[in-house]
Length: 366
Image (tube, rainbow, N blue to C red; front, side, top):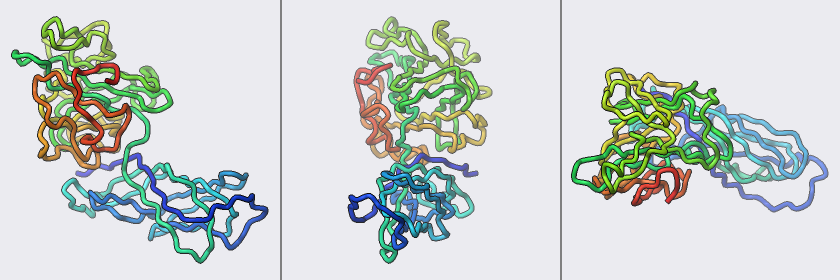
């Protein structure tokens, strides 16, 4: 079964027009704005018009009514008989397109839902007889929000096969307070339908307001929230972590009473949240889908990062969630982590979004 997918998208607008510098004194019936709206992804093979899409135009410099239109079956929308002015393009709608999987095969009977949110430049009214422009939308998920900022998984320098100092760091790249209530953290084995571990924050998903993450705040999720340097001198101190993974079925799992817990949801799992030292996928979701048996609904995914030490790695997650992978060249037990180049920087391609750093930096950027 293919699940529905939502994306935050960035819109690239290519509009040519004159630079009108004088204030309009009346409506000019010879002016219009006509455009085709398409979803394009050259890597995955998309170049499809978006029909029945709500499009709005708001005049920038003058108090004029907001214009609303809908694209037709060809993806075209036209605003005619409009004032001579510059307009802000606004598209905040959900559209449905055919699903193309990670190997480029189209599934005509399956669809994905794309939520388009524009970040477009201004557009200008032009003559009625000029050809329409094209507005391309691309899946980016680059708008601010909760991001996976750092993953430390390879273990510290040691010859005792010690790797229990693993952690995942989250970051709020938005300018508003967000909430961790009910969010899930998953280890994915292969594609979004193969869930190895699923742990959840306390609270009610989406509407809960008990566990804030403030703008610019880092939040560290430790496998074990202890000072690991007392065991392996070249390890790290996670005793002051913000959260700790705890599995009640793992009787040997350390639980720091001073650190709040994320709890295991997977029946029969008696392991702590341990991730592979060489390659894996880490996914965070809003918690509205915790039915892991049929995978995690990609519509509920907040962020997803795949990592692998091998440059020729075969993808283990859909490319629409992560096109690449972080951690290329990283050695096991090297005390190295992967971290975003800049907190919140996200192009959905971990190959370019992340760098390998040493030592790990839980709770701050290197």
